[in-house]
Length: 252
Image (cartoon, rainbow, N blue to C red):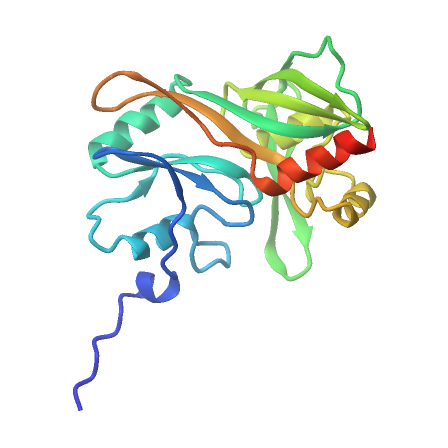
């Protein structure tokens, strides 16, 4: 009996999955990442978006993540199809030459005067049962903290809803959990944020249909790595967030 060859470990672990494609050419793919999916395997996860995409496209010679999104965040994710495109795009992210705007539902009434948050962030480990090294967390810190990283967030209130503010949030730096920590540090955590939000409120929001964090990578501007032309992409709010906003509007 002829034995079939065992699949490569990557393919064996990651079920092929296709994602909504917002743009694709020879250089890159932009997808709409759903919430609840990690961008890559690791930290106890055997696979993420990039491994699933490679399984779905076995003929693709090169697929690499340009940047990251938190597992709980939905929205635009860029994947390079060539090494030259990867270098070019990552350089833009590093040089802060990209425009990254998110939609976030902040708890409470966002103050009209608060348009800029320029507060350094510092990573730390939260001791957690069952995790030997602890859970990765981030907090605000002072300008004199040698381990603090400068973080700049621009905010604009797009719509006031009963008990919430729908925010357009543009980040000038790409720090871990930047938007989540910056908004929470001003007393307006993101609805549904299980790390930096209000636990009791989140529980009641789940009963009202919000079963995830309301943070969505909505718009991305960058320069095309081959043509040098400006590109602007937008990913519509996922149906579950849209439905929750409508429910809030109706209750108001």
